[in-house]
Structure formats: structure tokens, C-alpha cells
Length: 454
Image (cartoon, rainbow, N blue to C red; front, side, top):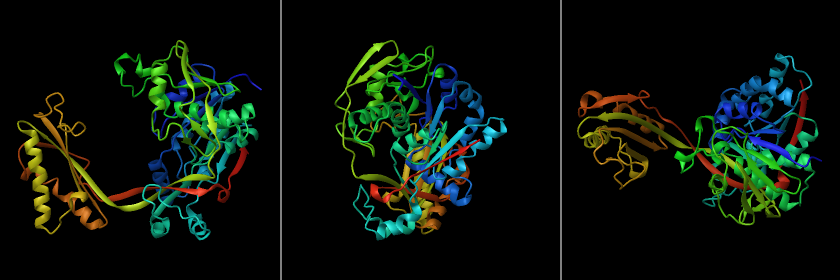
């Protein structure tokens, strides 16, 4: 057993900097590279892509990344764990073709499946699972025909199983964000179910690094004091078998790792800090000590955990109507007043044609005039020299929503002066994807691990 394992996270979301993982591999030692691509909206996007083309539905950026860094992976022996599989992990095994194209044989790639339960929903409901919405309490049955994706947040043990099968690259679908780093810890240190404190420590570590550079100085309130954000270093966990660990980054990289930067991220997306729920453990975020032990080194010790719940969380998306959003740029003297008049004109002309929208169906924003800080005059925003008028409507009737889009463009010549920019063309009705969080009994879900070799 190793006395320390280095696990870094180089991707906080689908669209994060490609340089994060590239530099992590090149700028210092690393045992594991994790990549977190998924969010709730990402899953619905991927499901839509797959419905149009059965070969899609995964993070294609991941395949491109492996193509770029494969020589580094081979040279260093670094293992990769990524949830890039989205709703189609099998298609993401395209990375095997990347290995073969580069003439690299013997690379084992594993996929973890079992999280996608979209087609199983009717049978699960018949078996007694209500999938009650965790926000509203409504059962799913009445909305079943609107559901577009349904994915279980799986835990870390299937990832550990894939690593035990010798996989150098592990691809999953939906799972917990911390699970990406806990899987390697379970594999390396032999942690078992029931070792709640150690699993909780892995959960805390995973939570700190899951958003990439957000714990090394990115998105920091004291941003002026963060050095060289352009080359910010992505976070690395130095985990020990006991569960005590250090957060750090490669030497010489930008950004900052100190108690403040770590605490900033610890508070991110936090519910009950004494009971952070995951499928592997309930972690107590009030139990541990946080201490700076050297430059760019923050130690976490004494994490406590308790038994996991008997349920998995399920992330579902559903078709919740239609929306249309467009914007104009209005400039010159009295820009805000002219933008307000433009909005009034749009509603007036639509009403003349028989299209009226309730207060909860329409939206008007004046970007540049305190949209984010309503009621506060920020840098003279009460009299801005230019304003972006953003308008939108939503509702169940697609044709009514679509009709709105034809009334923005005419303002260029039939509205007040100063309407100088129209962005994105005439807005059209697009689907609204709603979010449906629910629970499902763990004994209803079966996971599988499949390994292939290049």
C-alpha cells in the first residue's frame, strides 16, 4: 500500500479550460487525473444529442483531450477517471480508437454503467418507486411522458472495481462529483463500505477539488491578490490511508492555495454542513480541522462520517414548455428610458395581435442598469450610456412563444433612436428543460463494469 496518493481534478465542468488537465500532467508528479464534466443541465443536453444521433451523448472534448495527452499518460502511467460518458459511456469508448490510431496497445479502458434508468422508469414506478419531486412532493407518474433523462448518482465503488480490473482510463456516466476521487482512494488503500470516516474524508477532498481551480484562487472574492490567474494551477489531493490529506498544486503554477481559498470552496453548494449526503457516506463538514502547513499546502484532518442512506438521488429532466429570448443594444442619451419604451412597444404590438403574456410568462431586463444589483447605483448605472434590453417569454403554447420573436427586430427602424445592435437573429421558441430531483431505493439499481484493451 502506498503511503500517499496524488489525485488531481483538471475539469470542473464541461467547457472548463483544456489547459487544466494538460498542465497537471506536464508540470509535476501525478497518480490520478480526474475530470468532472457533468451537471444537471449537461445530462439533459447530452440526452437530446443522443436522441438525434445514437452515437452521441457524451463529452466529445474528453476524446480530444486523450488524443492530446496520451503520450503523457503512457510516459507517467497516470490513470484517468472521468464522468465523460454522460448518457452514452459505450460511445465514449471511442478513446480506444485514439489509442490504436497512435499505435499505443495495452491501454485498458473501462466503463461504468447502470446510472441511466430512463427506459426503466415505468417498471420502477409499477414496482413501487414514486420518484416524488424532492422540492414539491409530486409523484412522477403524471409527468412520465415528459421526462427526457433520468440518471442515478452512483457512488465510488464501481470506479474502484474498474481500477481493480486494471483500467488506466475509467469512464462513467452520472455519479457524485466526489466519487471520482474516492474511487482511486478505495482502490489504492483498500477502504471498505462501513469505513465511514475515511469515506467521509474522501468526500470532503472531492468536494474541495470538484470545481477545479475554484479552490486554487479562481472565482475568489479577493481576486486582486491572486497571482497569475492566467496560468492558475489546478488542485491536487495528497491523500493518506488514514484519510488525512493535503490540498496543494504543482510548484510554480499560478493561483493560490491557502486556508481561505479552500474554505471558499468548502462552502460551495452546501446544504446541511453536518450531514453532506452521498451514496457512499454522510460526511460531517463541521468535524475536521483545516490548517496551513506550508506554502500552497492546506491540511485537512479528523473528518468524521456516518452510514450512507438506503437511497440514491436521481437527477431527471423533463419537457416543461417553451421559451424565447432575444436582446437589443440601445445607446446614446436616455438609453435606459429608450430601452424601457422599446419593451413597452413590444408588449403593445403583441397585444394588438391578440398575444398577451402574464407577469409570470414574460421577462424584461435592462443589462447595464443594475440587473444584478437592483436598487443600488453601481458606477453611475442610474444613467448608463448604453443598455442591453433583454426580453423573453415562456409558456406551454409553442406558437404563442414563437410569435414574440418577430417584434424585436422592427424596433431598429420603428422604435426610439439608438437601437444599434440586434444579437443572435430573430429569437425562436426553444424547449424549457425542467429539473426533477428524486430518490430511488439502492436495491433497485444494478451497476456493471466493462473493460476493453487497445
